[in-house]
Length: 473
Image (cartoon, rainbow, N blue to C red; front, side, top):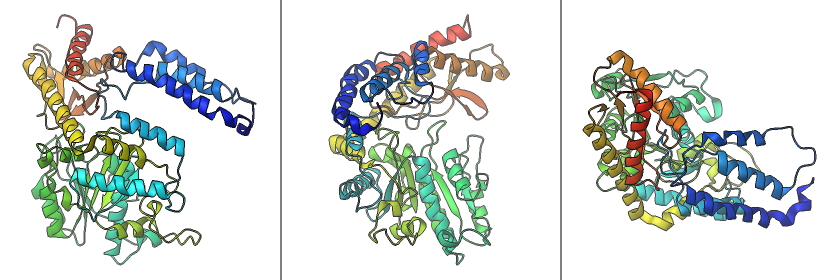
């Protein structure tokens, strides 16, 4: 085999191979391990030199399916609680297949009016779901990191304009460092965006009142009052270690008082707005100048998916669109509103899942996951040898194994070993973090498939793991 032109008639058969593999694979997610380490040897089949002529379409896809369905980590299954990783709802997954099938270039309206219309509708629906004002400009991105980059790029352009500079055109030369303030909850994603923007990942003044990172509003106000010019405040809706929130409304008050830009990183916590009983956690987000979130977390659409909203769409264009490329149309296009130019039509799975389940479906999803987190938190509190380290605010449960008779200095190493053994066991994934200097487990519950059975099963498997790591416990 060589030129794919000679195999143009095999495309439907190749897609049929994937479709026929889908039912048994998806049907196994509720029972199979999150990762079957015994199947890791299958990955060796991916290796080898670049084929000279190639094996042909069907042979390649058959091999990839054999390796993938055996050796993949089931991040889309109901028992992957490591990091904060959602799954893909049936509608979103099918919508993603449509994305690949149609293969639209979504950056320019000219190349795909369909993709552009779908993105506009998806963004409007997301603003509605998350309680953001309708006039906000928006763009879909590959991730919350790109969404943070989008919002903070706009913040940097806004800040430069207040110094009489067009950073998009002329860069940062001759300007002072842009002041950025945040609580200790600021995520590496925001720091990475600041690093890319030339502000510096360590150029953040952290105003925290304790070792958990909770914001010190008085210290933040003092910092803002001492500055000669405007600053950028980074607020966090959903902190990754324990699921806590910055008081967004208080940060918005500070931003108004001192003429600052408020950027909110709501990677997963923004979706609290979908729940009537939890939306108070993001009160004030509608006053932010920019907001970032992930779709492949709690929206449960396939990787890669994020989105950014900015209160002034024209500022988005000034930050990303002033290229002077005369062959590009003058219409507002999504590659003028964000960091990407070549973009897949990632609006399709978002449109499909919101169309399929609507506002009530996502409210129920968020509430159910909160209930499951509370269930796990209650199990931890009832166990004499487990310690809940933070209140269960949303969907993250932060706790550790802390049996009597074990010195405090030994608990970190003990919990680190438990976390490693839990991952090696493979039936459940729930890794460790460092919270207030303590090594802790922090399962995050954001997958649409997860049920009470999965939560109770995690506790049972954790007991088995503890018994192996700490015999006689």
